[in-house]
Length: 58
Image (cartoon, rainbow, N blue to C red; front, side, top):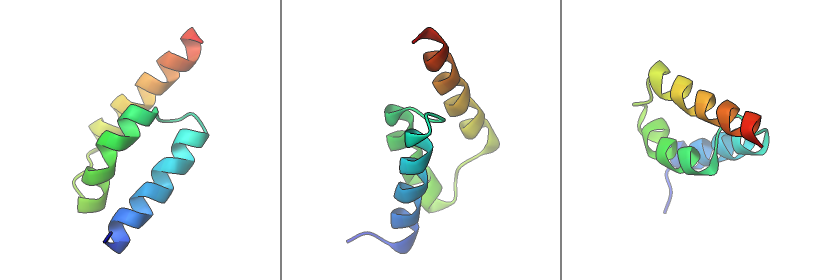
């Protein structure tokens, strides 16, 4: 059973993935940290930079 924090984290990351701001792989990695409140600004920056780089190559 998922906690409310886990459900919210999944919804947020699904939207970010749909908007191509975060890759699917990074969303999976970020989900637990986000639900636990342990996500740092550096984590966001890296995930967004990787998605932007991937988008530029496509």
